[in-house]
Image 1 (cartoon, helix red, strand yellow):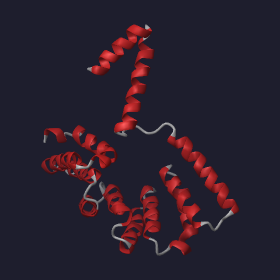
Image 2 (tube, one colour; image 1 turned 180 degrees about the horizontal axis):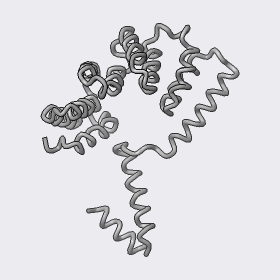
Image 3 (tube, rainbow, N blue to C red; image 1 turned 135 degrees about the vertical axis):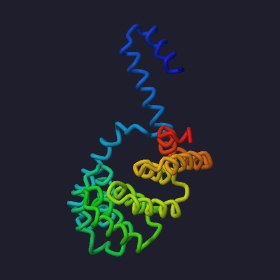
Image 4 (cartoon, rainbow, N blue to C red; image 1 turned 90 degrees about the horizontal axis):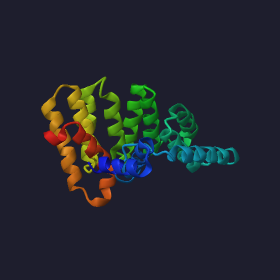
Length: 225
């Protein structure tokens, strides 16, 4: 209601409904970026592109800088350039073969490229090296990737993620999605409700990170469960 009033006031002040709508959308975008995070950042892709170019130039001068390669891989994964990230990871293998973080990155890329068997093998290798690597992220990515092909295994991985990262609203939201996909409406509603309840119990410094998943759970019907 407040935004309708704001729109009406802006229309009256500016005399142009299209400009008024544009201003309201900008305000909504800024509020979402500040408090929720459902919409993507406009400036982040530009900054990331510059960072990728900078690290590539650095590696032309220092081709054996492992920390630079690790940072470049992180940025390429964030940019969804998984094939390119894998090429850099392969160049790091001899130096990083015992690293759980390394195998987690390999698994993320393989899963994203649709190579589920290779991705699962890499993720399990990461978890064997360190069951809590990246706060249990391999479990979460495996749950996402296997949700349609093998829902039971996906549920098992997500349950394991909950035990490693008990403050993750995303785990409950993903569980709810898979239960809904399987037609288990009661279990889905429970998972969405638990997502919201966990969010309500989190300390303030964690709520910004998890707010997106609590809101999505509410939109999925968790508020009615």
